[in-house]
Amino acid sequence: MKVAIYAGSFDPLTLGHLDIIKRSLNIVDKLIIGVGENVRKKYLFTVQERINMINLSLKDHSNQNFEIKAFNGLLVDFANTENASFIVRGIRGVTDFDYEFQMGMANQDLNSNIETLFLLPKRDYIFISSSTVKEISYFKKDISKYVPVPVLEAFNKKFNE
Ligand code: PNS
Image (tube, rainbow, N blue to C red; front, side, top):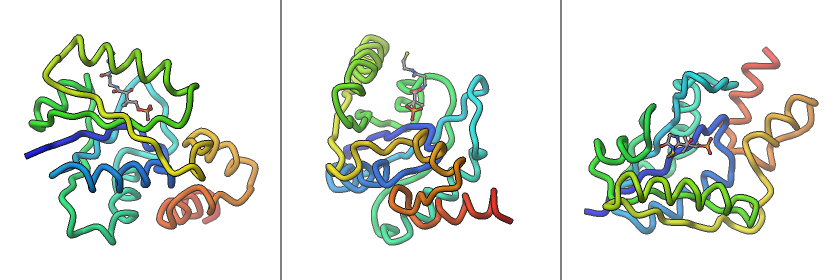
């Protein structure tokens, strides 16, 4: 069984992340979506809020084999615990490549049994990042083109209620 990890902060999940999740689900037998919980990082949404947003955004995919789990520590250790042999990473362009290459190489060095799979998102999403979404939302502009509906609702709940 081909098990893969797709990990990230997902603070928040974007349409780009969702696109990579859907592509991964078409490739692997089981996808573990790992939501980073790094105590040294400051997040806008709690880990439970981020997990809920991903869960709601994938409600039309409930027939597919995925789990959403919080994780901290090294990604390769999380992959090992979950019996995953693949780490999926999305690459939006050359600016992502340097960081992804370094992380992929470090992960290969830490555990050579785990392969990194790089996937490309739909062209429409290549400029979207969680940071740009937060920046646009901070200045009260519409983010509905960049995030799934449950994420939009979570922003409205947090900032407009
Ligand atoms: O969405 P992000 O913030 O790019 O997610 C990055 C994440 C959580 C996947 C990455 O920071 C990570 O894997 N952190 C765990 C530590 C680790 O294993 N680092 C790579 C080897 S040095």
